[in-house]
Image (cartoon, rainbow over all chains, first blue to last red; front, side, top):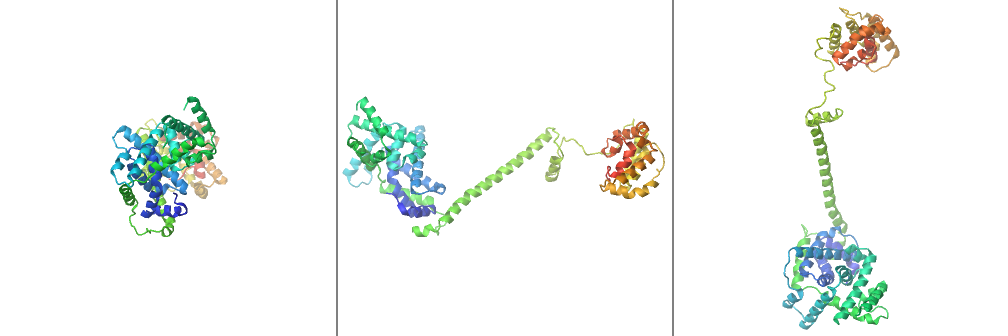
Length: 185
Length: 299
């Protein structure tokens, strides 16, 4: 849910270091950012999430723009953090538990609901993981970031035309995988 | 899905409009394509299943980290309402920008300092390597700024008048050199007097030369020494020189063998720029003329 008309004031307060403003930004962005990280198969999405917000705090002085621009900027940071994390882990592999397993030991609300959500997340990752990395990038940025083609293009460093083609091929491939698996979520 | 069906599906997606794609991402089948409902549902469910906030303790940990990172040196400017903080926005931006600007200035200063040091070092290195640097600017700069006399530099301006002449030098050359030294020692001769004395020395005349005729040309000499190009004074000087040289200077021929040759000898022997009058063919006559026109500066 976007912050809307209050966004300029929230951003200005965040620049001044107001904690309430950062809390508002965090709560607005965290679900979609975390969804993107999980869908892309981040090993420890919550750790990455913390790193992302610390970087946002550090670099906010360089940001200029409205709420859409802010969202694009945040997902740019998220995307690059994810790539860095992958590189780091490829050099020093660490065995980590999937976050669904960890969440099973944490505080939960409706157990049945959480279990279904966990299964759904696992199947989504399984299907999306069969797409090419580029198709995953554009499809998941579009899906979780709610970003326009041009915004996705600026994040992944491609032309909008190329992003459009990748997006459509990704959707076609996803549908094929769903048919193969007989997936019905 | 059969390969052909997949190809057809791919072609359909590639033809799909942006609006239809947008509908799919919102969990709605595009247009009348009800068969894409499963994909639309999948996308909607995926978003719902994965886009969840972290556990409360994780969120609390993140917010604590953020609070620590944003905490300013003094908390006074912070107000918990947007209205109060919006007024401070320009100030905050100017503060944020001052930092990088200061950093840029320091970077530039460092660059300029490094460039200057490099030039100085390069000049000094060339000097030590024996390269004769053009002009005296570098030497003077080094001497004045650092108090360092660059080594291995050609000494162009030192010793206008040599200490000694070669043994083979003619007596007249020695006599001319003596006159020059006398003049450089600070005697207040007019140009006419100097020319007459050089002329007399070059011709080997002994005793005080006749400078009585210079009394009238003193003004001219001093004017000329001041940079005047007064033609009459120059003529006067020339006449004086003619007279002093017995007409040889203006005629030129005999003086070329005698006075000129002597003056040349004196000039060569002395290696003096100051004796341009002896070098340029007019010999003693020119000495007088130059003296009159300021060709020879005061000591």
